[in-house]
Image (cartoon, rainbow, N blue to C red):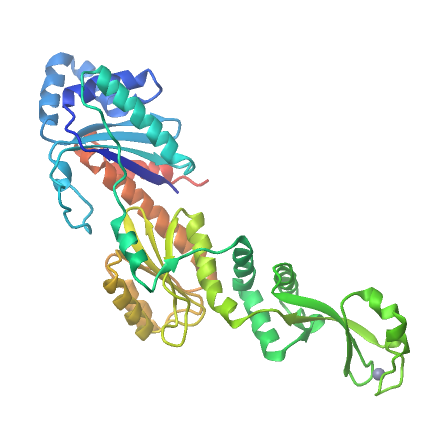
Length: 427
Ligand SMILES: [Zn+2]
């Protein structure tokens, strides 16, 4: 997974200054790849460099010009846009006011995804200095383009910042696992159950692991139960095995068989420690944690599922697009997909995703499969992680390629395909 960050300065930077500055950056560890490639071509063709450079730079006075600079496994870039953003922009974004003004964009495409803003700022400072040394007199001020759309969503009353404590994340993680969900449902239905009965059968091992996780996360309480060895009647709940030898326990007699409680059957039982509110927020908390881990950091919750809207919904911004992602523990039907699509249009989200842990009704799946742009859909717990990661990874690559697209014709190679080779390798 890669992260792309960029900054802009509202300046017309002459192609000649940029060209000279790129040469200076090489001494500081940023190697301008396109410049080097161009020089290699010209050398091979035995064309006089000054003549060719002059022709290229003349074009750079009106057309986007820039370079890709590699340092370690990160890719930095710089692009002058003499005509502003009107020439190219994401298909979904309307032309903003002032978008025809010239600007200089710098960016960082990083597989490391940590402290990227620091390294981009370092690159920006070095580039500004190199430009000054190359004859650009005006000061450059870098600014971050505003994420206006998430901000307006935040102001809509129904949305709240998606925040959860580490404990809530751990609880959601333990409770969302399918075997754990079955155990919790059964415990809720029955009030309490014998651990031996819960962890019996073909899935004994996974049930016992899930139960241990639930107990660790504080969602299930495990106690010891003394019951009649003859009738099976529950007699007394103990919180520790030592209590069995307690005199008060020893002296009590079983009403069914007359034995002292100390001589009756003792076994482990489990009971649920969960609230309805917790259960409703688990899917959202779980999804939020997954999205955070994948790099979608600016997230809002719409609301937890209720009888009016059965899906938990998270809105987020990632790779230059806004995403509306829904999660349901039940089977998702066509009406729900329609309601979700209305929500998407109402808040103007670019992308839609549905994680239906109980699967999809055929009509619901069909309508999502033909959605444009393609919807992200996972129809089971097993699929969810992979679908989320694959979709966001692809979106991250496409976004990086989109930012670099003004360089595509100058680069002379397909940028998206190149980024795929650079950053799609496993690990
Ligand atoms: Zn008894």
